Length: 231
Image 1 (cartoon, rainbow, N blue to C red):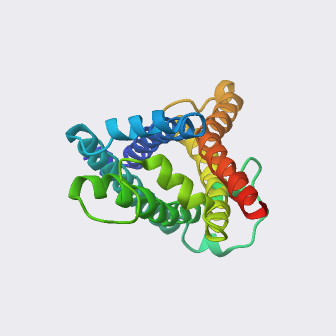
Image 2 (cartoon, rainbow, N blue to C red; image 1 turned 30 degrees about the horizontal axis):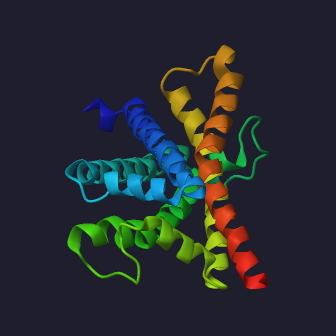
């Protein structure tokens, strides 16, 4: 099958799954931003996307996209290194137009995946999973997500540590998306000279739009937590 056996097919799968995940992150970030303005509205959204059949199907679909994207990323990296052979050990000057993130996408991907596991434990496991199973995961009602988010990020000391860790994760995610979105668009045909600069701009804008809502929420609670410590 060409989607698996050809280089073009593998890059197409990487691009398609990556862009789908970017759109989800954009939606998820905008959803999270609501908590800054209205905790009641945020809880309403969480209820709509909580223990429902369509939310469960969506969760399984997202898990599938992540697994496929990650597996293809590893496979492509192995294939590229095998194709270069011993040339990859030669010390050469940096090629023009090659960014740091483009040379370290797999490493950035591993970091993103590692923090994703932490994020799933902090939020999906203690909110959606707890609501579905009735499992006791803490002192907060799983349907009161706003209270839990506030408690996690404003807890003395550890809340601030979490905030800093998440902000560092967002930097890594931004670097990964800044190259990934452009690479996906290039793989899907926008690879001529006319579109090269446009693709770079679109990639940077999309990476920023995805990361910014998440960062605003964390910065909001970081400021709140510091204020509570100083009070």
